[in-house]
Length: 359
Image 1 (cartoon, rainbow, N blue to C red):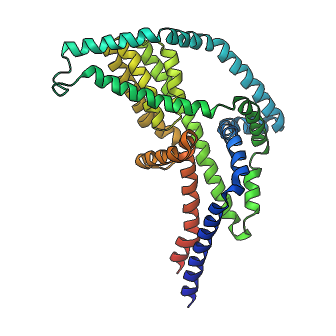
Image 2: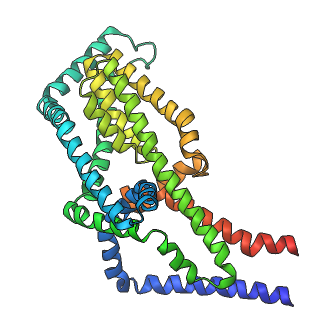
């Protein structure tokens, strides 16, 4: 009888949840103001959370050293502005020069690319690989067109992502300041809403999510910077044009899981191919070697146990995130999946596994 009542309550709860979802769908106009608010603050909030996990260890260290958390945050802001200004003064002129040169030479680059493809087709180098009668020029042109379209989609998404630049610029530091200042008070507030008998488990859950997100974000930054250094050194060795510009673009795009690595390789290979087919091959080899070093040597030490997700699962999660939320969906897909997984596993242990073991 008792078991029947439990099953009945379970099905009643499921029906009530489905009914709430159905009613929410029918009156979705009520949620339009909230959706608009979320759309306006999601980017600053994401950036603030990103820098929060990067700067929090430094803030905690300075707070323990001096005892004044606000002063530590203000000093970090000042140092950050000085370093950022130094990077703009030291790096931006070279980037700007390479960017202007790339834009100015773009018509010539397209012409040189066509010439390289024609020479490669006439030489018969790939005649044993490609099927007979294959038009190499048109085939590669189609591939390049698809690559450019793919790149354009994500660049347009990036433009949309940063369209409210001034809002992001002014709101993000404010969000970040209060995140760093309040520390773990947000987690404590969530715990206080929980029933007393679950507060210990809730504290463990929040700590696990916090460590997982912090490890993922910090690890992602370190691994991408290491990837950028490896690629830049390799590009300098093969004398690849626009090496600094292509490296910076690649590092930024590699923050987009999986897809970013593919998209960032397209302009690198094209620029290398325009110089010579061998340069394109070497550029591709450098990218693959740098990726392998990042994934198989650096990542296990950097990420350690911060995330536990199979590569195939990661790909599926990223694709679903892209389909639902575009660029923002891709960026938050893996952290959101990891957080959801931790919550569900904790609920499973509390309400199902422990009771089954005690039964």
